[in-house]
Length: 100
Image 1: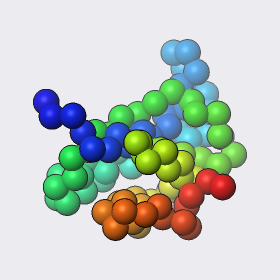
Image 2: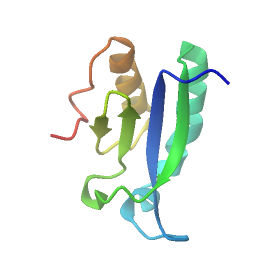
Image 3: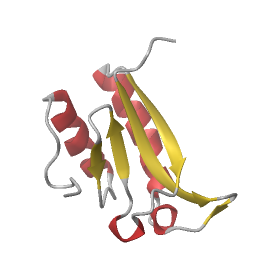
């Protein structure tokens, strides 16, 4: 496997072995199939992973992109994912969703 240019993390709210946070209750895991599809369609050299709780429950669903260290809040739709990926391809953050 080639080292990815980007690692996209989606909060899955796990604390220990249980999903207790708000991101998963706001259907954060439903974003992953669209992220994977868009990654492939756009030819992005990226890895998509779910994570344990990122401790920003009130901001969720939370998504993080490394190595840029872009932390996004309120990523609740495929359209939000598209805007974030569009900005990433342009080499900038998607300000609308960016955590301050």
